[in-house]
Image (cartoon, rainbow, N blue to C red; front, side, top):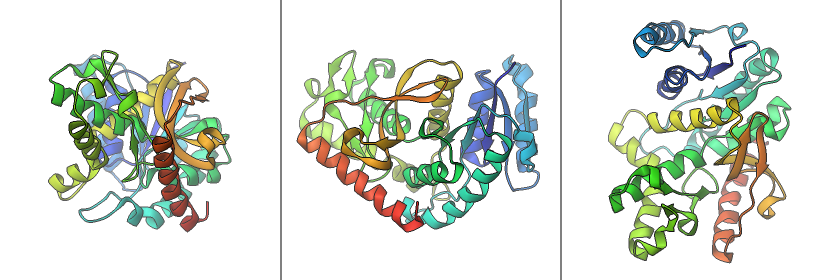
Length: 308
């Protein structure tokens, strides 16, 4: 039986996620949105591209969550995007209301699904979805670290003029200004980047990674990033659909790992058929641990505001 992935929200992130899913023939795709006509139109357009792409993915769109029944994975992108001058935190209350509505409908029709949360502020929305769904922690995962580390990898590759395939990078913590890129664990063909660049260069790339989303918002003026965020969510979905046991940085509900309890924070995760199969604990220096705890503190403040 073919796999089924629902994408909630047919804006730029959601529609582009549907595109990556269908173009890679990972699953049949349902695009759902409250806006009448938009998910239907984008789904039909994408379906009509499949003969050209030589892919047999089926795509359908609509407002009715009955279409989403028995989805294997639900990627939730619904929410208001950031506008210039707006922080992720400004979105908190608006997007929490949207998340409450969406998760209730998803749970009704796909009680065994795995949720990948993309809506901002990411960590707080993942926590809200976890509490609202009643799912175990392995079935609610936030997309943040894959995107943040991809940005870091892109900047490292550009700086050193090397293939992005050679570059691995790790970014921990909340998806925001307090994220914790880890240069010690970031390598080019296995060589730590701290051996290949001076500290000032590394620090500059770390800061650009932290500002990655805002940099794109500044250019676009009327929207936010969508190619990389959607590709990141789909990489997570692929690891689950294909049971790859792939280690990716994701927002996970921690139960004592890294000394953090009862909170969604970005950490290295093993993703497979059961969703989050293991939180990988790596050794942090006192400075890195302190930065991670600061980041967790920022997430905790947001979570307190919405009471989850």
